[in-house]
Picture 1: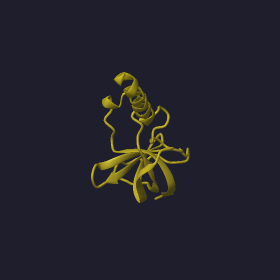
Picture 2: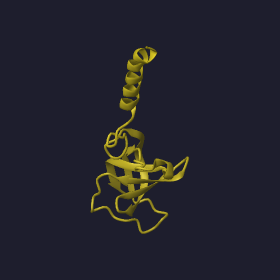
Picture 3: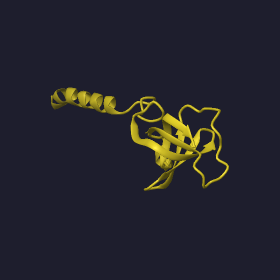
Picture 4: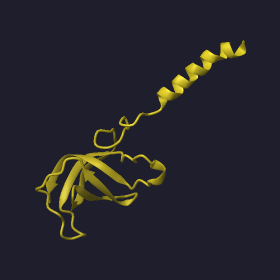
Amino acid sequence: MRFIVRAPFYFISMFVLASSCSKEGEEDCGCNGSTYRTLENQRARYSGNGAFVVPDSVAGFLQVLACDVDPGWEVSKDEKSWNYTISGNIKRTCLGPNPELVVPRPGGPTQITHIKKN
């Protein structure tokens, strides 16, 4: 008799737990995810393939990857020169199917809202 009384409780609990788990494809990361940090008129060095290196007071440098790459951007020829000034929204990096094996580095995919050649 106790089993019959407790059964609905267990089924409801299982349903709540199963529906609370995030489903694949609904992660809050990547270019379509929410912004966790904003760059405002930050000097940057373009290293190619959509990657910018930006100085950071905590990590030293961040590598941000542009969500939309412009083929007209010029790669910096000198590691000490900052050839762009950028503003943008840095998104969280998607960790993939085995997040326990990935150590996310500072930075991430970035929606560039303003870019100016120095």
